[in-house]
Amino acid sequence: AIRLIRLDQPLSEFATRQVETAMVARNFYYHGFNLLRPEMDLLGQEGTFALEPGLVPYLTALFYKLRGGVEESSGRLLSIFFWLGAIYIYYRWLGLFSKRLAFWGVIIFSFLPLSIIMSRTFQPEMAMLFFSIMGLYYLTKHSLDRGEFYLWLGAVSVAIAILLKPTALI
Image (cartoon, rainbow, N blue to C red; front, side, top):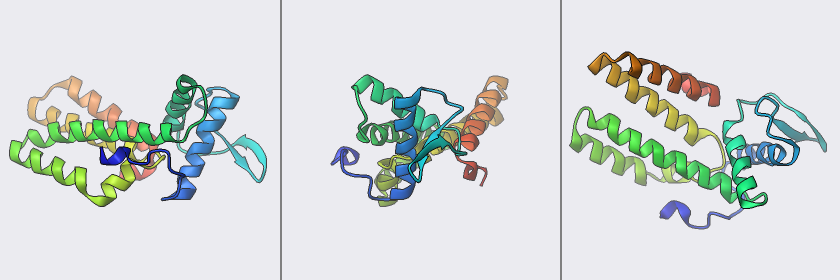
């Protein structure tokens, strides 16, 4: 609930990155849903710009379509959904080792101030974190259970995380 307070506030924290993401989402909405051509407005000129693959702006533009217009709160809401998914997978991952560890890990991850701030921002960080944690979860399951299916799920999840933000390599 704390993440839903003032969901419609202007993009103020980490403003430059959020504005870029919102701009790409808006251009997907107005100029077509071509995932391979993310467009930004540069000095009054519209055009294609090299960014990470625009999965988050693309999904946000789909929210715009469902809601009938551009509202930045849709981007914040999508980030919160990815955070909820990350919390669930994080709990499952830590639960492989200890239920007590999983409980306290989720509590700490949920209420750290930076976690609250970042999970409300309109940028791809939460999606990258979701897919990174999912990759770790499935790769750990593969190492424990030797299931080849888990290996593929983990590899695909890590690949998506790296595509979303190359810093996921770290």
